[in-house]
Amino acid sequence: MPLDKLSALQPLGGRAMYLSDLPPAGYKHVPFLEFPWSYERDRNVQSGPLLAKGMLAIKGLGMHSAARISYVLDGKYRRFESELAIDDSTAGRGSVVCRVFTDDGSGNWKALYESPPIRASDPPRPVSVDVQGAKRISLLVDFGERGDEGDHLNWLNARVIP
Image 1 (cartoon, rainbow, N blue to C red):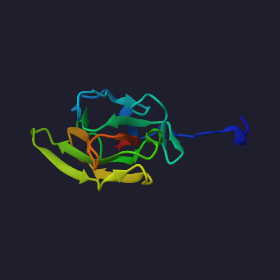
Image 2: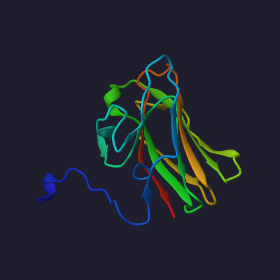
Image 3: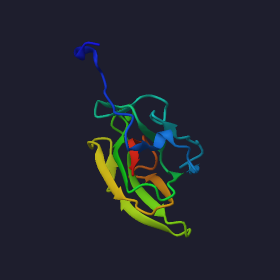
Image 4: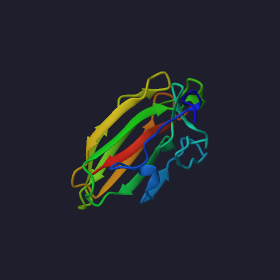
């Protein structure tokens, strides 16, 4: 394939495990009004491509506020990494706060990360969290500044690294 025809190049093998390739241990969405949203694997929450500031991500999770998704890690990983962005499909709307929690197996969840407000106008925000010893991880997307209007958050390239 000629290089000028290449639209994306993403390493899919190696040591990192993309969360979108793992089965979730649980998912819950709490609607602002009454409309429920599912999460999407390798797509935005409306089943479109994961786009942030015109950049395409092949791997990631699309979620709508307020929601939580959890995965079993079984202590196999040392880091969680991702980039957080409101999807371009919102046409400049949306703001959320994201959080990362882990559980060491005792049932006591520990907050490891809380983002500042993430707005549609912001570039993707990198996240890198130490998850050594964690049995489970939960990613939360919470309401931002205007209820849930346009709160289509992408966890771009969400991955755990051994």
